[in-house]
Image (cartoon, rainbow, N blue to C red; front, side, top):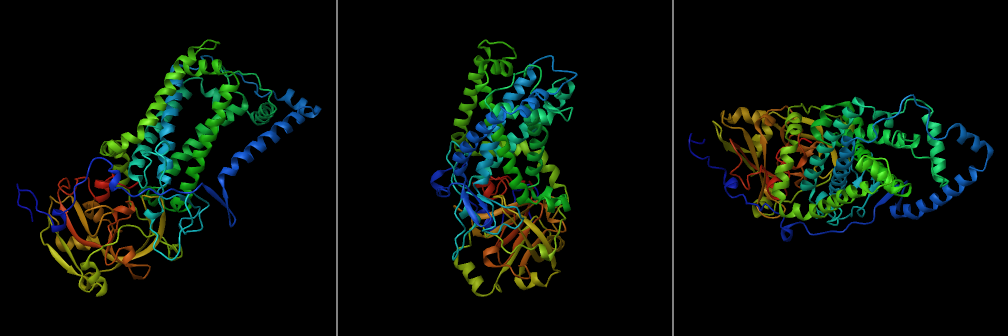
Amino acid sequence: MAVRGRPQSHDPIGESLSPADDRVLLNDWLPPKVGVVPKIRVGRHWFNVLWALPLGFVFAVIGVAVAQALREQPAVQDFLLRYPGVPPLARVVTDGFPAWLRVQHFLNLLFMAFIVRSGIQVLADHPRLYWKRDCIPGTEWFRFQEAVPTGRIWTAKDDSVTLPGWLGIPGIRHSVGLARWWHFSFGLLWMINGVVLYVLLFCTDQWLRLVPTTWEVFPNAASTLLQYLSLTFPADESWTRYNSLQQLAYFITIFVAAPVSILTGFMQGPAISNRLGWFGRVLNRQRARSIHFLAMWWFLLFILIHVTLVFITGARVNLNMMFAGVHDGSWSGFAIFIPAMALIAVTWWLASPFTIRHARVVQKAGEFMMWPFNALTEWWDPNSQLAEKDISPYFWPNGTMPKSAEFDALVAGGFKGFALRVGGLVETPRVFSYAELKAMPKQEQITTHFCIQGWSGVAKWGGVPMRHILELVRPISAARFAVFYSLADGSNVGRYYDVHKISNMRHELTILAYEMNGSPVSVLHGAPLRLRCENELGFKMVKWIAAIEFVDDFAGLGAGQGGYNEDHEFYGYRMPI
């Protein structure tokens, strides 16, 4: 027990934890690995997505030819006269594009640029998408990595791929920790911008542009599409109202795709998914990832078509309206548009090198931005147990295996010689043998594992409840955190460890697991002992546990960030989402 007024002395492993640099040191990072051209599975066959380019061009040419032929038909001409593209409205927008709308339009573009880049970087850490919760190799519907090799151990970290620095943030392999901070931070700014937009839309008459008020919007949208495809563009009335096709596209983007993106983003976090019970099982993590990905493509397609039409239907007038707030043929819109695009280009170019050189700054900024969400969701009860039928037939291995004579001897002896040290700020430090641990009250639970890289899996875990360990060692009031030390080193240098709030240790689903699916936990998955803490991401559930220490602060451990991955790979100490 620590003496009041003196620094706490740590477990021998804690005293030897390695420091970490505040930058990404590329020479010490995971070596690059190039993925493959993205592929989509249809049935049993995989198709290169690049086929979409020539096929899209062919379909566009056919669409133009068909549209022009249709316009020669009397019935179609009557349809176009009856539905010119804009349904009758009792009211139109009277103030054009006000300054607040123009500013939000630019901020939306800026935020989306970094949300998409960082999102692709996150996806590159597990470059496969599934519809089922069980991430069984071969069942994915989309990937930009080769098939999982057989005949060897292939971990989730092995599966990660490198992206170019101009595309991902920061573009290096297995940089999911840093990419998530960009994604979450700009996602939060984007949501705030969206809430302000919703409020201002309905406090003014600007909602008239976006919200259909009659069912005639649908035939008028079909009419507008036919006009665009036949290359006879409809009259532009954007200063006061959008045509029906624009209105539907904007409505879907703002009031459907945006909320769906936010919902499916949150549903990928363990605390939120587990909290929502049956809904979290229906919209499971992999389903949410897939829908999140498709929503991104809706935004990208919308932006592509939107920008194309802006320039081919009258760039000066269109840019004047959205950037200068005037409805004329001057060059005032270009005078604002060019610097605005230059700003986006410069920030785009600098994002990756800045992240590599100032990785700790990015981590700290992200932790500050996400603190309210993490604090809220950590209080939620993650009690969402599943049934035997839900157990995954495949559970991805991950982590760096222990490489020591000590561990090899433990494996050879069936872990009979294993002993768990529990100390620090406790009344009764203890050393528990493997047999003693297995003789303690046993708890079984079937839960979902959420890896920070994106994969998930369900397993049945059996072991000692941490609350029972707490009863035996009795942490003193000053103990605020539990530190778990591993028998394994991290991916680069130094021993693996992670820190949890002591309140998490008292939860009924927090256990020290020595069984997985009715059998002893395999060495690959953390034998002899691994932590299960169901409201956190998987990297915090330390495998191959050697010791547990209760502390009042973790600033003096390692690099002081709350864990090995937090120190060296810039993950977050609090990771319930």
